[in-house]
Amino acid sequence: MVFRNPQWFWLLFIIPILILYELLIKKHKIDTLLYSDISLLKHVSNISHRIMYYVRYIFRFLAILLIIFALARPTIPEQHSLIKTKGVDIILAIDVSTSMNAIDFQPNNRLYVAKEEAKKFISMRTNDRIGLVIFGGKSYTQCPLTVDYNILLTFLERIDTGMVEDGTAIGMGIATSINRLKHSKAKSKVILLLTDGRNNSGEIEPITSAELAKELGIKIYTIGIGKKGYAQFPIHHPIYGTQYVKQKVDIDMDTLNKIAQITGTKRAYRAQNTEELHKILTEIDNLERTEIESKIYFEYYDLFYYFLYGSLLMLILEFVFNNFILIKLP
Image (cartoon, rainbow, N blue to C red):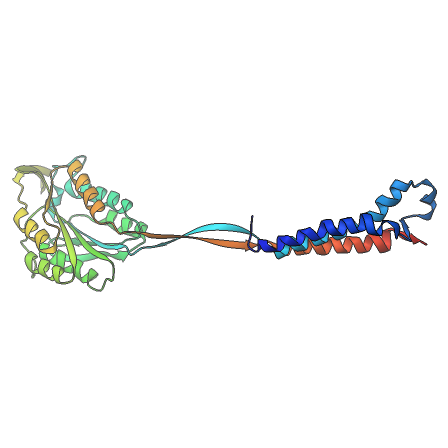
């Protein structure tokens, strides 16, 4: 409990003065005695006389004490933290071409691992708007920028190869992501591009999209997914069903590096397994952080009215005691 106006406590000196006045000055001026029943008079001792006389003053002094406490304004402080932050707007641009079915990651194919690691990345973010773009031969917005991560994760879980026509339109994937970020007023605007190939589709070249991103203050982190050399790719055989063949992994790291350099992220990343992809996304998560301004303030809840109610109750009790419980003997 905190008293906001403690200067009123000097009035407490009035109480002992009043007590002394009652005990010393008015001691010889008592011209009446108070009793609840006249028949009890013969059984009441001199000590009882005094006790019954001073009971009413106990109520009065308590009333004065409670009024003084009310004037001192008792409160209960409650601490609050006011946090102001401008989050990062992030677009996850994920390649969903059929080559993302390659089995060179554990425990599943590239797209499965990319989705699982993207979920972990999302779980590490707070106060950010995150959206999702998918691209193959064309690009689409799977989920616009949102702070509802549950909705975002639902859309992320649904993406799969074959959702768009096959191909790798990296430039279009970046362009669609830019379209989602161009009106953003966030402190930082970021595209996370995950792909396992080279641009072979779409109307816009990757470098052209990167230059546009630079003009709009958008940074692009590029991540190439896939082992070096050869990887097992599933193909569908009309008779034998799904078969796996070795194909050369062809990731255009030169273009990914140029995109990163143009937009200020310095270099492209290469993830050859699940652990490397996790480390890359964790590193990017640490790079893209905003400072949080935190202010602590106190909200005070007044309690003075409880003390006023208490003083009123004491005065009522004194009145009842004087006029209804006791009678006066002249």
